[in-house]
Amino acid sequence: MRSDALSTCFVLVVLNLPAKSRGELVSVALTGSWRKCQPSTLNLTQAELDDVVPLLYGSGAGALGWWRVRATELSETDSAQILHQAYRLQSLQSVIHEEKICRVFRLFGAHSIEAILLKGWAAAGLYPDRSLRPYGDIDLVVRPEQHQLARELLARPDVKDCWVDLHEGIDELEDRPGEALFDRAAQSAINDQVVKVLSAEDQLALLSIHLLKHGAWRPLWLCDISAAIEDLPTDFDWNVCLGQNRTRRGWITAAIRLANLLLSANIESVPEEVSAAELPGWLTRSVLRQWQEPFAINQPPMSHSRSMASALRHPATILEALRQRWPNPILATISINGSINSLPRFPYQIGNCLTRAGRFLSRSPRTAH
Image 1: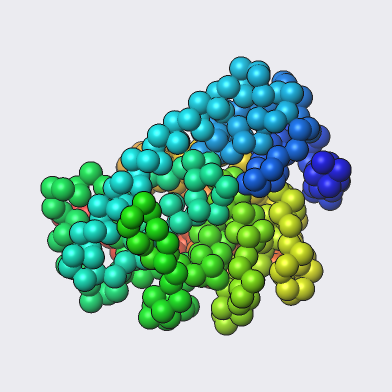
Image 2: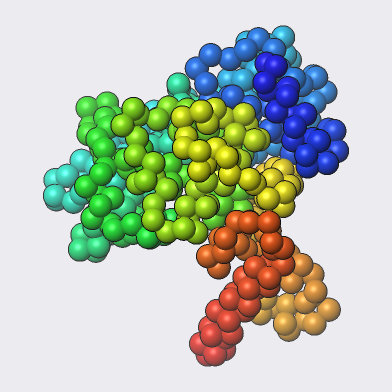
């Protein structure tokens, strides 16, 4: 508990944040929440727990919140019981999701389609209890030459309820040959069904880049990374994980350091290149700002009250439309393949806006017809 308290103080002093910001409360509530054994103390008052529960529940970290609070004196409070209900619900949903995953893999196997299961169920395996990690869609990647057949099979009535998000490549790992991803893939089992998942190296890279690609708004994603780096296999290859692309190597490093700084993830086993990396202040501030209201409804495009085409037809609404579309510095940096360093983010944010404006204008003539 002493290390958790010191970590919290470090964040407050270095980043000059208000003592009881909601983002910081999320950080405290989820610190170490992925570990099998939880301490009997928690650096939150009952009032602070009451304040943070809607943020945990609404962002998908409710079960993790329960796991963290269950051994403490706050476990019998009404707020803790809400978190407990989230855990119970996810326990039921996990059984349903696993049955659907098995159904899809059996169908693919019958047609010799090789698929790798991404994120979701695979990430849940990083936790001591799969019910701690919610997931909805079944993210699968297949070889490009099998993509069309896979799509046709997924249209069959017996799997239409399985909500599969099918990929023929992984954007976050586009710098890695697809064949190598399949060659390194590991096998896992769901009941009596064998499925393929990414190697530990590729999974940590995917989780890290996915976090930043989406602006790091969801605390659960940083818990995934924390759980992954504390449970690395003995033969883990950091050169494979970090990759050869210097920019993406910096992204993965930054995500791991964020897990260490905000959630006290243990990084003793990571190379010095990662553990000694300095994080720019804007990065951590941006994450905690996102965690003030970590809800999907606040993320684009759902946060846009009207389309840009509609705003252009009503000039008085243009400034508000532009404000809603102003990207957070993390998303802006990743979207234009920028480096995470101490330089100002404004140029990256402008670049992101110009890129999106270009796409909008290129579609406009077709839209007009």
